[in-house]
Length: 204
Image 1: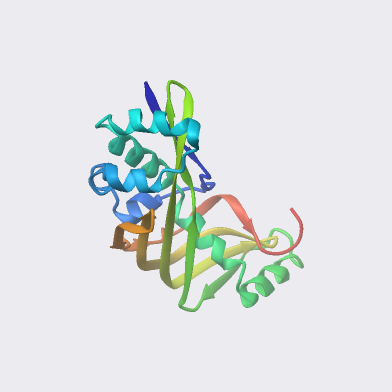
Image 2: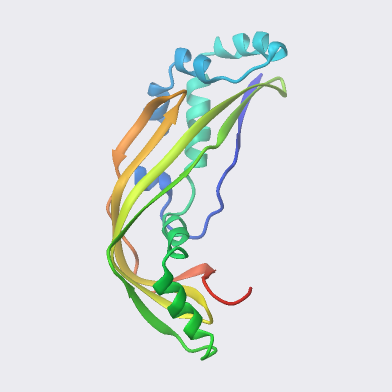
């Protein structure tokens, strides 16, 4: 009996997922993860080679790997965008200023800005509970955010008030692009309070 497991999953915040944002489905990814491509991508040692041949002969393998890739895409869209905010000096300055008025919210608007985000997780393929291969993936998005307004309190981003985001998402395996689509248009929700505030100034 074979199974698959995922490694390197990013943390989540709250809201629409990368999978929904990228429009990727298990069926579409499985169709692109051919046995030949999976064999090319599989990182095995001598002991795992025989096991890999047994696993690869099982028709559902592409679907199982695709299912785990979809799990890897459960990172949160707002969390991804928030990861770029700490790079903006003006926003950090505004966050620093809120430390002078504890508990008092400050509204800040960000000009249109672009950023990229990516990670390189892997899916582990097991046979009878024994690892036989690692299949690495590269997942990335590039996007532009406009009309963004944030609420800052005590050095943290506490709420996303308005904004929208557009861009492109890409998934690669063994040097081949298996998914590339324009990101679904995202209207960042009004009055959305982040489950975990994004700290930009001060100490946790």
